[in-house]
Structure formats: structure tokens, C-alpha cells
Image (cartoon, rainbow, N blue to C red; front, side, top):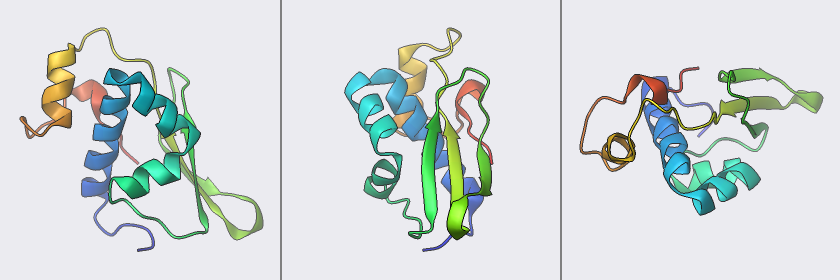
Length: 109
């Protein structure tokens, strides 16, 4: 798959990965070390020309930009866990017990 045609589904799944990273430090380390592999394991596969990076800056926003040599860089924000969310609220989102993500979890591109 190249770039996803259904960005809403993509955003939902990426936001669940971000939320899971807040709850599981081992998963977070893996996500930061190999974001493309983590996306692939979650069924979110991009073409080889797409480089995925994680930005842990508290004010980071999703970025899609041109990279070197014809690559495209997809930068996913992974800010610190918001103090306004409980682990239960985050778990409910990650595990699909609720259909709407808490506002602090949504990753939009």
C-alpha cells in the first residue's frame, strides 16, 4: 500500500499506538526505535520510500514532508502522557472499548 486512502482510519490506528506507548514503556521504546516496523506490525504498511520518525517534543504535531533523495518523511508526535487522562481512559481507547478517542490522544495529519 502506498499512502493510505482512508486517512481517518490511519489516524485512529496511529493514535492507538501513541496511547499504547503511554501505557507500556517497552512498547514505547520499540515504537521510538523502529516506528516503521511498529506501524507494519499494526497493519499500517507504507512503501519503502516513506521514512517514519517519532517526535517526542511536547508540542509536536504530525508532519508529512519531503525528505532526501525522493523520500517522504512521516513524523508522528509522541508527546508525554497528558495528565488529564487516566490509564483507564487510555486503555479503553487502545482496546476498543470506546469508539471515540479522548481529545488528547487524536493524531491528525
